Amino acid sequence: MNTPSGWQRYADWLPGLRLLFAYERSCLRGDLTAGLVVALVVIPSAIAYADLAKCPPVAGLYAALGGMVLFALFTSSRHVIAGPDAAIAILVGAAVGPLSGADPGQAVVLSTWLALLAAVILLLAAWLKLGVVAEFLSSPVMLGFMNGAAVVIIASQIGKLCGMSLHEENTLLKLLEWGTRLGELHWVTLAFGLAAMAILTGMRIWLSRVPGTIVVFALALVAGRLIDFDGMGIAVIGAVDMQLPNPVPPELSLAEIGSLVIGALGLALLIFPEGILLGRAMASRHKYDLESDRELLALGMANLAAGLLRSFAVGASQSRTLLNSATGGRTQMVSLIAAALLVGFMYFLASWIATLPTVAIASSACASAASRSRSRRLISP
Image 1: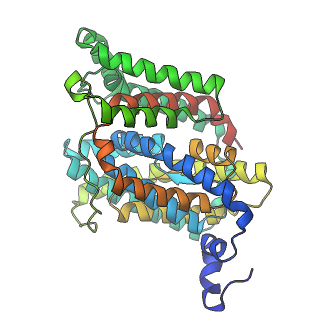
Image 2: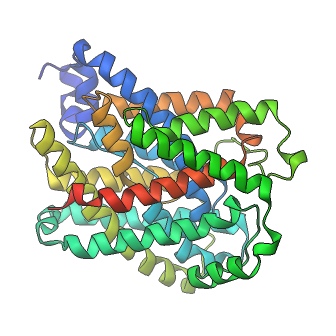
Image 3: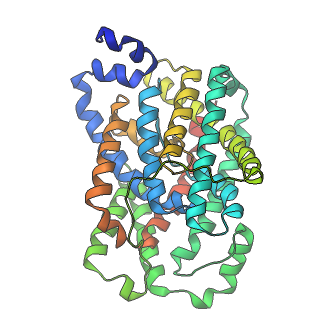
């Protein structure tokens, strides 16, 4: 590999940097297309998963930004896309929810430290060269967990689909509360939600090459500028502060640190196998080698970036990775292109997010959860 001699040492540690020095222009067209698709999909996903993590929408966007860039620089995979993930967000929400007292500011601080702790665990695992452990992971256990996560995601969004504010945190209790309050259902919100679900289902059946999430998100963005959803009683995202997060402050008690360490261990045990198994599946499909320990390092650095940006833990995204592969992505440049487009959206189209109806995000999250449970077999060892 021909790289400037002064950068050789860094290029050995940063495959993404090495890519920039020797990028093949023949890959650019496919990478640009895939980067655009990934960027359009990651925005509604990041907003939805931030809600699962008990964090404000901007935290999901920064998690996506930091995760994609750092992972792309350190990974040996040419196709895996890192960022907010539904199952990981659920674990984050479960860990920070009881400690935050429903305070969004405190939830951000706690989720930040959780991401940093998960990063330390993943980096330690990479240093100990534990990537080989992925060979012994139980696929049925992971499949069961992901199916359970799909139920939790749908239950968490069912109130938004029906225009109701549900107060219970426990999934079964939330479903019970929803059933007992059906008389409060907002029919206009439900109609929009069902229309979005119909579009998503129709796209999956008849136009599977076009991600339905992008279509629904684009339609909802435009509709939000033309229709007064708030006046119709349909909830919208509201103003999103895109200010760059401040440095992480040390605001934790010893008791909170203990709880977060346990949560971080659980996160690492999910992030680690998912990332490596997905990476291996992509490497096998596209016929190149993958370094498991390098993937652990990349996942650790992605979470370090997410933590420093005051967001929440991230992992390898199966849906965005498969989209990347299907739309012609060929290198890690896809993540960098998607990150650049995400920055442009965050700072030039932030006002469009404010008028976005939350029911559109909820519909996409439910559809994504259902598809995840069906396709999890793709990363089986």
